Length: 635
Image (cartoon, rainbow, N blue to C red; front, side, top):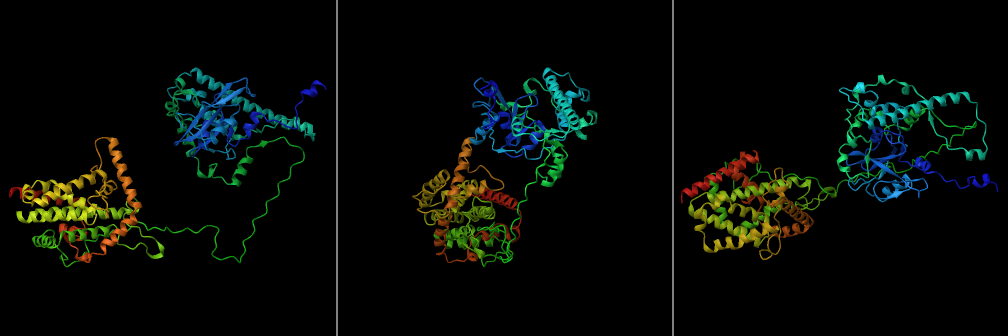
């Protein structure tokens, strides 16, 4: 066997080189500029690999991560153990070729660098149309200040790194221009090729497409508008690199200098000329202008057979059948309207066009409050709370749409109207309690205060209503009520003990844990939702948060959100218990003197109910303070 025969390659099992394997990858785009690579990656995780313009033979990974395009240098390390003579890596793992390196990081979702945390997931295919008709202009745009320093105002001398980049860019331009000219001459001078044998075809290397010069490539540099180019910063130190070195530890600092501003030129392109928005016909037309020519034989290959068209649908199908699924309506109702209508409220207890807080109206309310038992008053309050929480509404309405109760909508946007109703309910009941106590003489004030203390006790013990219990306790512990010393001095001993020993201790535990103690009530029908109402309102405060530190505020915020989620999950259980309680109450809503509409008409009158809520309650606060001052003076 001759030496030539022994050393001849085995064409039966061809082994493609690492370079040819890389060219087959869909994410490899070859010699594209930094500006163009940034315009191709648009979604989180999009990536591509391109040739480095500033360092011949190296590769750059371009990734869209956290709203910006980031460039990573693929480190090429000489190695005698590798078949290609090099090993490729980012930080840790090394591979013999770039294809294995990218496949590893994509399949294992490994961060390219620890500092950036960048993960590649969506390869940008090179089948997406790339405008290569003007490569010279893009290179000129990147190196405009190096080619024409006189065109830059207040220009400075080029440093060594700039001169190196300039030389490499000029070589690339000259090589591309000379190759195009030589190819044009040789192609026109040669005669048609003859048919080649099989062995000759196997020995022949893969053809490299060469582009014929077009008119756009021959434009002079002076015809370009350099004023419209982006303002380039003067490279200093290590910031003149075209890409980020993935092996350096200063990646976070250098990420701030990575270029995304060069996309300004892409934003100005019309939508119809975008590569993604082009149709197949537009792509074929534009591709015909590129003048790509491949060596071929005399026999032109035949076009592939057209695929058979899809079968026509049978006309006997159901007329209203569709290729798409019909949208299903939501099985849950949207935001429900408010249930409070004080303007159109009618009751025998109050006049149609009443004025706020008249002496006759105050005396009537005090008589109704003292006439009913504390348990009856607590039941009326609980019945109104259940109505506003939509506990008494039917579970289903027409068309099978489910009507959720207010507890299930407590944390959702659909519950905004319900939350507004509960805020109005809490404010009006609190001021109703305070004003009913401060109006009247000394004996009347003490009697009304005693009734409200018993009502608060029954709200917890009998009905498990933490919502209104907290509202009434807020009124009883307000500065206006607490400042009148004769109120508490004239209280009976057992009533005072019930307030200080039981009600206050329950209140402290409610503020800490968010739930009523088990010794106070076995079942809670209406939980304490005031913290969530405040946090989800348009003007939240920190009244229900631990303000000792920032971490304590966050912990208390999460505590209330977790409790709200637990209440929403048990919304049906709350509703079932509320229905059983409300079934025992016989008084109608129009005869309920502790309803929200009655409270609003009592406090603001028929005309004042529709005014701005903030102004209304500011005036009420001033009135309560004035009545408290009057009570202190009368002592």
